[in-house]
Length: 267
Image (tube, rainbow, N blue to C red; front, side, top):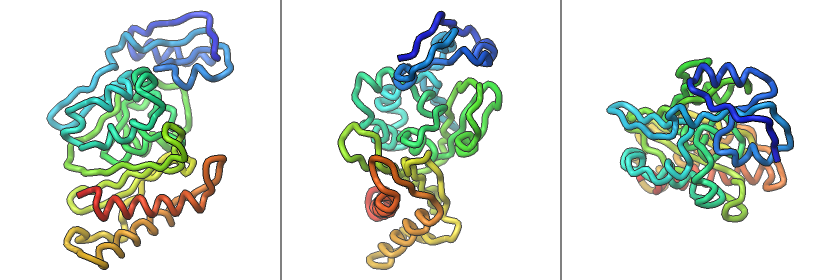
């Protein structure tokens, strides 16, 4: 369990950023994972006064504040109307309702955890993050950055017509995922984002045109294209072993889930 001497409630993003530059200070979100660590801090920085706990719907995008809970994202009817069940599906296996009512979207994204369902789902879309230091940058680029003292303010998802389907495999319900997969399509162009390998999610585009005119294909031809795309994606990624599964098993699962999404679920 962490311990700390004081709580600083940030009055602005700049103040939050300046406070977190002290190596003995730490920004807190929902405290669901951080509280399990064994460390003492001089101060923890609370972002609850910055108005980052809401989902804003504009004509071009959704802006999800970093302090928005996973439960809020799960229940959002506006997100569901635009993106289908992707965001409710990606969080429904995460522990339980009480946990999801406290864990924050910002904590999941900033942590860039290898097991993150949320990162996998968000990366499937044209998504961006807004941080104090870097401004607005693509989520895929942010995921590759080294960890540093910064303040995540918002996650932005463009409304560009992308369709996606999310799936994951767990050895037991509510356990960490063995693999996470989100297949997406926009204007006939496809990509697949795969996480929990057990490394963090990575997005692979169909640069070879394997799925060109995919929806015009039928029968064995369509099934072969879906299987080939799964193999193509898996060939671009590393799959490793931990206590939950072996790398080869993860690779096999990823290919299966990509094919399933293409053959039925995305339609």
